[in-house]
Length: 366
Image (cartoon, rainbow, N blue to C red; front, top):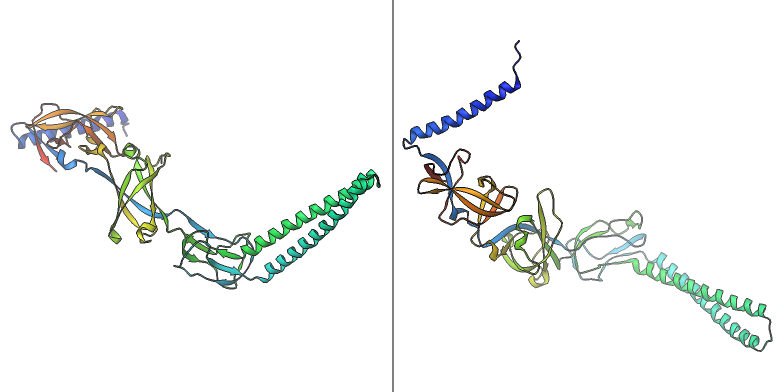
């Protein structure tokens, strides 16, 4: 078997490719004896940008929380069901009280006992201090009684800490809503034992007053956004249109799609809680900077430079003509032409690798 060089195979493929392109031009020349080349094209007016940018997004709750117990115990009562709207501070559930009531009672008794000991010690110390000043007792006796008084004071403070802790445990046995919320899930029932560690999931609640609408914006388009600028959001599913300001433009860039998040904060009380987390919408951002610009596929830009300058081929009275344009990237596929094009331009989109300026062409508008 004869050895065939890879270089020889590549040469054959290259010759074949060139031959095919030559045949393509020859075939079109046969169809057009004048030598003009039939090419596809698009009109400038057909790719003109609207005066707004539109991005899809979904409403989410600013606060989405799983309620877990601060103390362990057995659920005695549940006051809400899934789908219930509750105000801040309202009871969601309560644990069986006997254990917490006993603990609170013991803490109260211990504090009261410590307080009485301190009061008696205070009286004794004040008497001792007078005797010491009258030099009726020794320094050692005075220091011993002073230390005893300080110990009773510390014991009373420790008992007070224990009482406050018992009060907190008692209060924590009443599970309350931390903010105005909507109960989306209930994971427990009456009689369920809930634990601090590992924590038991009791309820999932979401804030339906403060909502966030997040959109992903290509890096090249971020310059058109300003915090505080008004955004129109359209929710077709409920036939609702709202206007809210941009709350935050996230500085981090997602390297997977070279985009950043723009966050619009929505006060749902203005809309009588009609908006719900999970609702899909379209955000429209109106900007003067995109008027009279055009969105074009990046592959139609020739001799592109890093500063956003390049060439397109247009049809000028049936002849191919290079036209300089300035652009900025929108995403990995598209660019925004910011100068150099007009509505009447006919941009050639095929044969770009074989056309020369002045070549006779017959554009077919797609």
